[in-house]
Length: 128
Image (cartoon, rainbow, N blue to C red; front, side, top):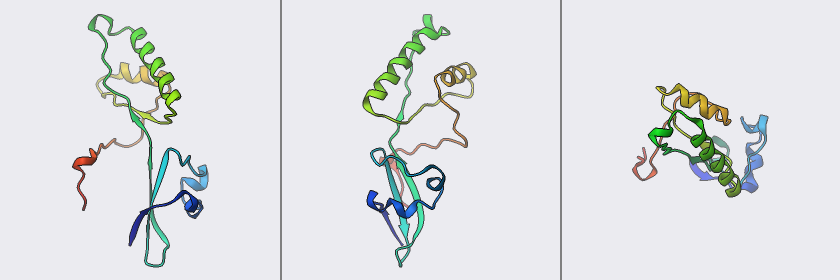
């Protein structure tokens, strides 16, 4: 088995796989596609890596907490900055104990991700 980064000129080889069959190929400027090939060169595994930004570390002065104006201004400016930088994906973490914040971020277009979010700090990653 050989694992490798699939060059964009070979991406047509995965067009029959989901989610590409339904959604088309992603923007190669922001995506990398890894494949595993068997001894005959057939793709037997595929995964995608894409550019995303973890937008977190929000702080609001205690006197302004509970008022949406500060957060709204921060997010509006952040969205403008992200668009100018060409960022296409952002994720954040909102505790289950803060449904008020969940509702607030949803108003900006965030959607709850299905499943459970796992984080990998790459320098500490273990190869198995």
